[in-house]
Image (cartoon, rainbow, N blue to C red; front, side, top):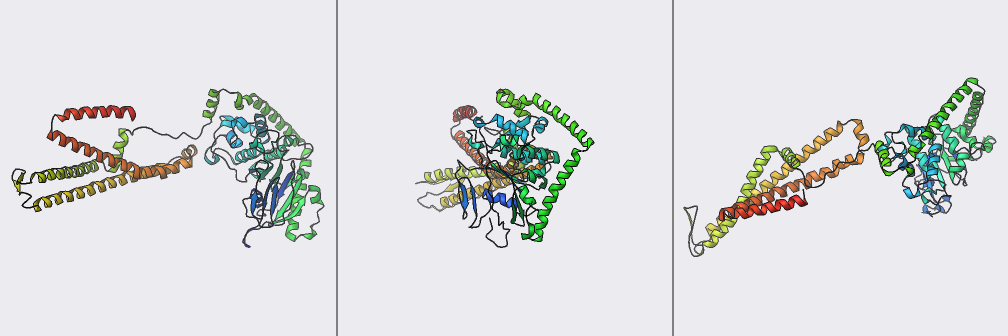
Length: 525
């Protein structure tokens, strides 16, 4: 793979073949291109026209990728573990359905990835919920969960489970996040291809090729193949024995130093291990450690049934999940808004001053509408005779002059437009004031919240509060309040006119309002 720009990092001269059941260790200094090689295999790096990557029937050539998904798939454990905000088990299964869940393989993966001791510490075992971005786990735990996910979904061709049928497993420097003992155990369980340490490996990864990027050079003699990268170039590919007898004369001084460093590091580690085996104190310590491990295994066996949830009833499983829940359920309210919400909105919009001015403007607005209807009726009755309004103001016969009637009508229309504009502007101003108050209070509380709040509330939920919910308060809620006030004013104005003209209709109006309240209570409250 290479970049289209000559100034970009280029990985060249890489040529290797990996069979099922083999482990390829990719080593080299920092920045030599190890992770770039992994990304190239995944297809995330742009390839040059003469690059060809073939995995069974999946091939990438000339920048184009053709994949047979039934025959070729890849499992990947990244250098920075990808952790979902869900349970430990769901992180490992990674989308596998319950019908395809392989309990026996899952248990072996937990043991191989050294997750058993962690299950004893977590409140609900593998059903413990992981916090946002894995904040409740250490770096080593996240690395081992990521490795367990890749192992569980790799090379299980004996099972008719398509989700566990990866042909290739990529591990990008997962050992660096682990302590020495855990790193050694995990390597022994998964990658050690020597004759005396391959039992677990043959059970878990025997049907897949494995590419392991690592800085642990002392493990090179325990893998099948070694690929050495330096400054974007492949300077060696072969076995450990071939590396020992490799001729360095064809390489530059820098490449020679890299190869010599790997040889010496591996030899020093072997010498240290041999010396430790002859030391009685270390042997004694190892015996004590073995005793502790034996006790731990016995404790694990006693609690093994706790973590095997296939045989648990539904209530027990729910209690187990509840005990390990970290993320709190999002609180939602349904149905009609409570009176306290409306009172709080009016309080934030301006309180008593806002309500008083709004009622004043709405009264003049509705009054102007009623006055226009009244004046049109008066104007119509002036056909053929003069009319008197308010007892002492006389208007002439409209056949004699239309001007006084038009002037009064124009004044009333202008007053309606004026009051409509004023009450709408006042309503919008109050809505903006209420929205700003809500936003400032929410921001202040989030900024002063303890760290535990962010562990139990996903960041997506918080962002949703500051985006979609703020939009609802800014627009939807303000519109709803405006419609409510307008509808209420129309109702009041209409009832006042009706009762003023026909007082006994008050009884019928009250009965209709009572029926409406019953229907509203049944279907909305």
